[in-house]
Length: 111
Length: 115
Image 1 (cartoon, rainbow over the protein chains, first blue to last red):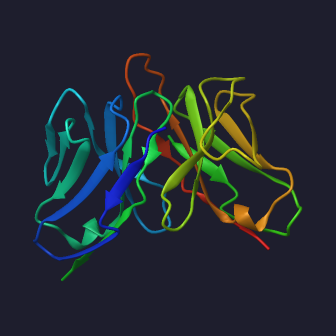
Image 2: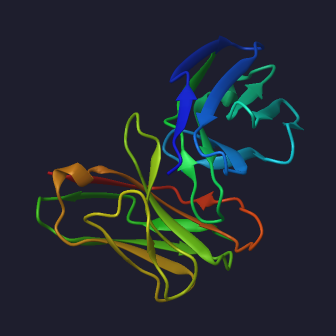
């Protein structure tokens, strides 16, 4: 089955700096790569996703890049703000019913 | 719309007790899922359903049973709880798209402790 590795497990940045979280996957047939944000005491919420037919996608301060050859994808957050502090999960899937999640990155944005 | 709701929010069980977690969604989604979240292990799929009356095993199904008698509800049962089942449980739902995957919407979670 699919295996997703996520790094780093914790990340601390100063407000205004950029943050990058990286994931690798094992199943070359995976074609859908979402990123979820989980705030304390809440369920994960989708923030951006990318499908295997594109290499990059942006949504305001958030971007995701995908390298299918190397089987890795990354989340980039620019101009970080305190409200970006949360746990971020990457995931990979090749079917409509099964997401395999990474182990999460705790992002702390300090003032 | 309330989205995905879960009942209860917290529960403490003794080893060997049974309980049912209820998930409800009001988005008319075909797909529903149960995950467990443990420290350092991300979310792992327990069981899922692709429609009313259907269920399938996920990555970690042992010790759990599920039922999807109504499209809007997905129940997760623990017949004989064990300390290893102490976790936070999340339910999610998504639309049916035959040619591509779609966003999963998560509930707020149920924190279960088994003593």
